[in-house]
Length: 413
Ligand SMILES: Cc1cc2nc3c(=O)[nH]c(=O)nc-3n(C[C@H](O)[C@H](O)[C@H](O)COP(=O)(O)OP(=O)(O)OC[C@H]3O[C@@H](n4cnc5c(N)ncnc54)[C@H](O)[C@@H]3O)c2cc1C
Image (cartoon, rainbow, N blue to C red; front, side, top):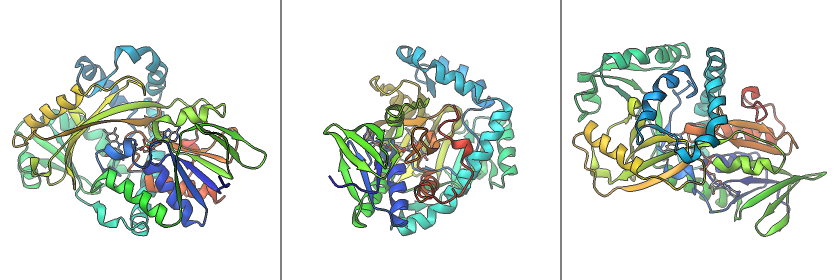
């Protein structure tokens, strides 16, 4: 095989966006994926550009909710006993990231990446011919009682401080925006600046197609190791060593740390496994994405159906899925949206690539500046894809990155 300029490992939304951004800077780019485009989390997510979600998941609020959630084996958060010991060091780091000082630091960094991602998104969609897939239909977070709304107010205050628009709503106002909510939801908050994509899998496939049409090469192979050379990087695949690149981007989602490990780098990437069911489009007349925050799931309106899903299962990459979680969320959705037709659904589960402080790793590898890490976006990989792509292109071309990358350093742990 020839020696391409840049090889991106991973044809998910992060890898393909980075590949397209690199192409736009005139670089010659190959994307390698062991299964082909849109094989991972980028296919089945909830489709939200959650730009207003600037508060890290690792925060005191989650520490209050977690014990209650953990009591329900099919609830919003679970740790399968078979993985409890393995995940303990990650959970310890997560807990440490929940201090007020660390949260404030992460929020500043997250806000900068969100602002960049939002600014980059529309030009990126326009340049890749995918702008017609963007929807500006906002998000409605609903609460069971005034107490739940009040408990959420500090988070909304932090968003006010960052200039994010939102509107608290009464049940009557919510009914105008989204008819059909169960009466138990007495309050809500609408964020108009929360966008979504018509369908995340079709979007990722469209990016792959665009990349190919512009002369990019997509190769199907599993990368098992990287090795720095005097000039460039050698990649080993199942077919053996010998593949070379000037620069490599690791964007292999929840598997990225395994590749980084072959360079001697230990990055505490874990997976927050999530589940969903996609129902036919006429299952419910959904007008906006609805978040049932107290129950850890969302209902999204996609061009391909109504998707009910979320949940976090800290079960690693190798345990089999437990689709009872998808069923439990669907059952709740039926109670929360009484008109919802639950028949004809397709279940899915996927791996959010998550670092303990809820920020991604974007930056150069310790072993060589020719390898760039771009992974660990957790719940926000689609949201932050255009911003990450811009930053990767900056690094690949030796430009100063558009935002300060110190908080995203892969070596921060
Ligand atoms: C239930 C759920 C809902 C979500 N909802 C949202 C949402 O609404 N908005 C949002 O922004 N984010 C959401 N996310 C998170 C989002 O899906 C992820 O952060 C994002 O898809 C990560 O993209 P990625 O490109 O890094 O990884 P992936 O999409 O997982 O892609 C990684 C690719 O790397 C390939 N690969 C792995 N190892 C190798 C190897 N060794 N060699 C070659 N190829 C390899 C895989 O085949 C895969 O194609 C959600 C996630 C889940 C699970």
